[in-house]
Length: 288
Image 1: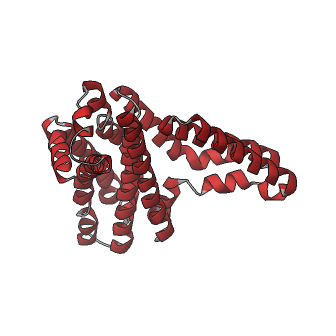
Image 2: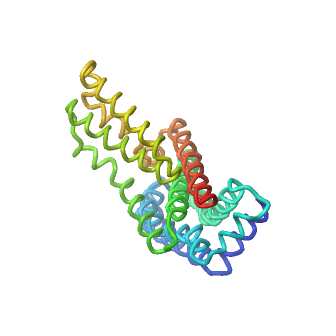
């Protein structure tokens, strides 16, 4: 895995993608830091990080778009798939290389709370907790981008798809108000979500019987709950989907000064899930 990691990390800087990505983030961190903390006098560095959540939505798709799509287009993925390393090692090597590139500007931001401290009141514990949450949120976005890149050979589609998913996650809390709260609406919503999940399973496995059984089981469970315990479905869809509002975890750190340990576990769980899905996507192409 170390060979894959070093190769990918080197490629990020040989193609200038790494330098541009780091410079892009550092530039906007500097702009927000000067505007919020230096000129306006806000003592919390988390104000700057809150602004950066929108900026990484633009930068991370550029970083991740070529992770697998470029190899697939140029057919160099065949060399990786036939190399004496497992698919898991290939995926982890690529992922950790992108996380390393993202970690560089995040580490540079760690100096900013100290600058605030030198010029007045600072809240270092809250600021460094916010930096940790920001870093893990970026790692979640990188995992999303890597998974999307594994599904296509077009870097443009990978970048646009990643941007769309991240934008959806950013707007997720606002979209909750449009979801149905009735039992029937929740049942329909759960059925659509289950069908989408089964479709992803089919895309990864291409197993008609397995996906057919999963679809029938899911529909039967939802219908059973609807007719036997309808009260359980009241506002159930909203309550469940609110749990996956990943930006709310970061807001707990940055806006509410709450150390959300459960939210950090959620971030790590999402990362492992997306790495697993990426591995399955690559395995499917390996044996097809």
